[in-house]
Image (cartoon, rainbow, N blue to C red; front, side, top):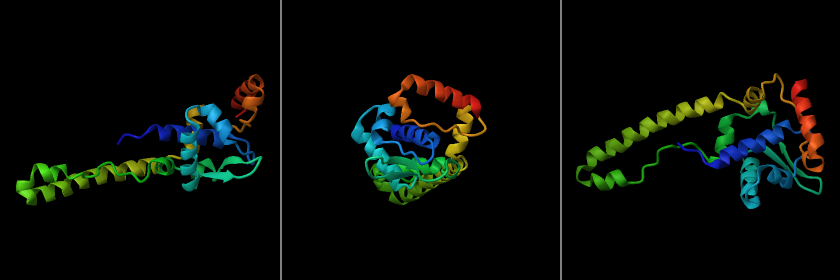
Length: 173
């Protein structure tokens, strides 16, 4: 199964939110500035993360987005299915039925057998994704024992100070 770029973008969004100082939401504008790309496309991804109960949307002037749970409680499976939908790598389209219409009884069994193989593979992939949390990935990525917190909002107001603060925070943890 090939995942779309939505998964990578959602992972970046979740990384920003998981490392954001608690109770300080990030605006969609800030997230868009960091990620780039289409603002409307980003909003669609954010909406999927909210509907998937991974991200919480806070309305109002000082609103924005926060992670809805601890990163240790969010699995990679939840992230993938929030933006891609349920995992089903094989969806019969009827081509086999058309190509082998003259031996329909075998085709019926063939479709069933092929579906079973892919269903088994999907189950294993789902199990693997469920074993890994967002927190685990952040710890491994940053080579730290605890995820550092920072106010990403400052990355726009004072980029140089922010860069140094980010590096300092990585050294502390």
